[in-house]
Amino acid sequence: FIGIIAAVTGFKCFEDGKITPEHRDRIVKQTNRLRTGLAKGLYRNKDGEFMPKGSNMLEVKWDCELEYSAQSWADQCVLAHSREDQRDGIGENVYYYHTSSPKAFENSAILLGIESWWSELTKSYRNNPLNVYTPTVASQRVSQFTQVGKFF
Picture 1 (spheres, rainbow, N blue to C red):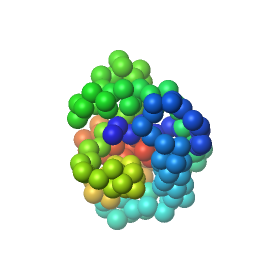
Picture 2 (cartoon, helix red, strand yellow):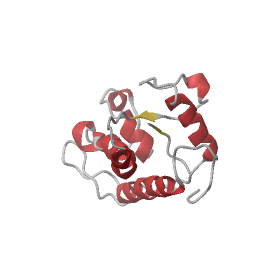
Picture 3 (cartoon, helix red, strand yellow):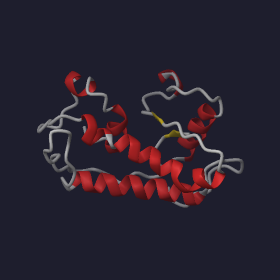
Picture 4 (tube, rainbow, N blue to C red):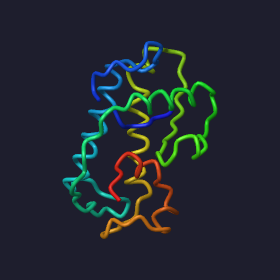
C-alpha cells in the first residue's frame, strides 16, 4: 500500500480500484483530523513542545489520478518510493503491512500507515518554532510526517 493522500470523499474512481469509497473516506477523515489538530497547535514534538499553530491549512481532498498512480506503483510490489520523474513534484509515503487476513487489512492497515507516518512527530521531530523546512529538519527522518502534515 502506497499512501498518497489527496482525495474527493465518496468519489468512485476506478472500476478495478483496490481502495473502496469507504477506505477513501476514512483516509481523508483521519488525515484531516490530524491536520486540524496540528493547525490548532494541539500536538507536541519530540522535545515535548507544542507545535506552532498553523494557518491556511486546507483540508485534503481525494484525487483519483493520484490513487491510480499510487496503485500502479504498489502493484509492482517494490518496497521503495517511485522515481520522482514518475510523480512530478508530488510527495509520496510508503507503508508496508503484512497480514493473511483481508479483514485485518480492510479494518486497520490504511489507518495504521497514517498513524505510523504521523508518529514521526513525537519520535523524531525536534522543536522548530519558525516551522521552516531546513536541512536540519530533513536530517531528522520526519519526511513521512511532513507529507501528511505538510505545514511548511
